[in-house]
Length: 301
Image: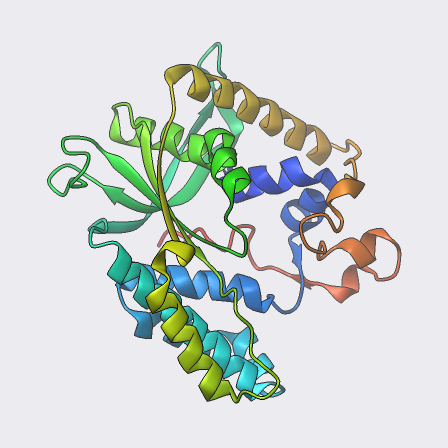
């Protein structure tokens, strides 16, 4: 059976081949997920359920959160309040949300010229949301429109302009076009900025939480952003060629090829979780081995 390959895996590979090798070929990951990653997952859980309570419940039920709480109860309360405020603000800011959310798909990866399907990989992923026929987006009736939700520390002109070439957006439009058997060329891309105010030394956790909630309520234009991103047929064809090339390179490494380390990504976008391993300060025993390759893909029953 072909292995599944996901957008997250393709992005990891484009960042650093060695990081991809450790995560997706050896299935190694840090023992505890960072608070930032878990908060992002909690935000998605809240949007999927259209409930700020669901986001907080996700944090409280997460094993990593439980371990943090033993050492930093005030910080845990602030994380919960932050996620709650972000979800509440997003639901208030945008009235229209897809009735279909967290749509998992699996499709063949085909050669861009011959059309032959790969015998080694199938492509899989999850759309955050889809406005399907019968539940159209109010501003884009009679079209299938994808939805993508993100949280980010910085949202500026460069962040927005990057969306015009964002690999994930192209990936999901290409996949949706195959899945729905018609061109899907729009993504409603919503970003919620993480807090830009910090707790003061003289401020209790509760006082900070109240000030944070008020800040999101009074400055929605500072925290909530929406862009409608479109792609042309030519752009998606270019993405298809790139994706196939990455797929072939992944197979080459699995057959014994040497993964290349991209040292520019070690600390450039946050510290890589495999940095100490690559520099020889830890062994593979410092990581846990995942029971399956892709955590975001639900196993078929």
